[in-house]
Image (cartoon, rainbow, N blue to C red; front, side, top):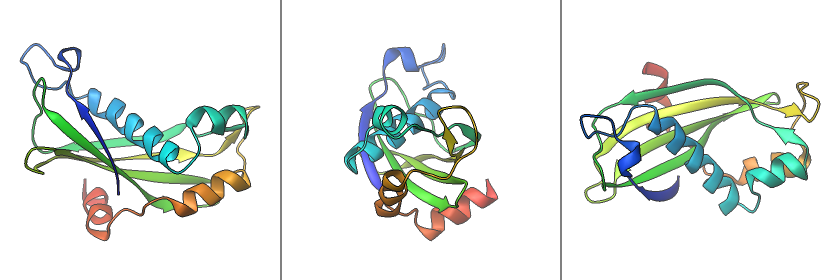
Length: 146
């Protein structure tokens, strides 16, 4: 899986000092964008140059352990499933210090053209997703149960 480390910011936390649950979806987006960038194509290029959009159709997160201000967290991202119409990304959020699993999640996207119509992925995007890391079987199974 692609790994990207970030640090829990003060603004990421709620009144109780824990990372606010909604931040995990932002972290998923960061992980997804950085994975695509590592494969050679930024989200901006996907939109501007290829004319493709990847709107979210479904997003889920299963929280296992809280994160606190200044914790270093690793966002692990991979492709869980692909079809002609879309792609599902899988995520794990783990503590950098000890590898403790804090959350698992997924986002389901469909391919859309500049005009907002469903479309097949551009050839370059399709090739990029083919090179992307694949989610391990145990993570895919965990997401089905979550």
